Amino acid sequence: MGVRGELFTKQVTLDNRSYFFNVKENRAGDVFLQVVESKNKDGAEFDRHAIVVFAEDMQQFCKGLEESLSFIEKDRKTKAKAKMERKLEKEAKYGTKKKIYRSKESVEPLKQTSKSPVKRTGRVHIISKLPENK
Image 1 (spheres, rainbow, N blue to C red):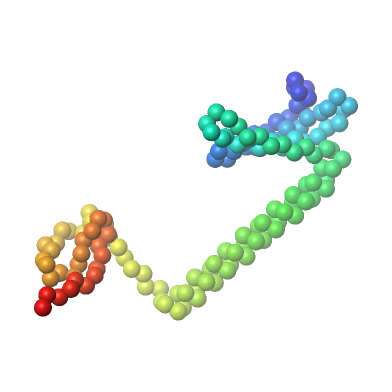
Image 2 (tube, rainbow, N blue to C red):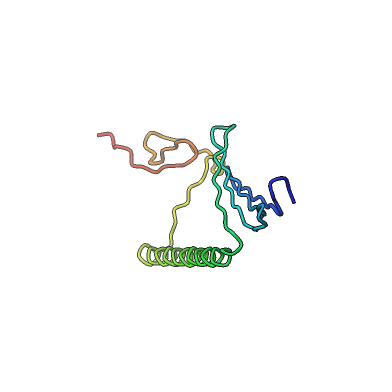
């Protein structure tokens, strides 16, 4: 057993946050799970939040977590399906033609005349109508 009653620890690091899943035992011999979120703030300081779930409550906790995860997965699938349907509707309405933009390096340089409808700016070629001189 560790110094603070730790039996097992698992760390998961994501972006600027770390999650610690600590299985501990208190002086009375009760085993519990401590979930700690540690977030880096202002370089040197850390913002820490912890929850504790005792062994007798673990089944209900896991059941709630499992239901939440299944809801998230179902919601994600529903949103992906709706996005695909919107995309198909848009393609049916406007067609599947897409504009192709080429970078300056991929096209041979052309001489630009004052009457040319092609205006070259940066990496993207923008076609616009120039005002006609009268």
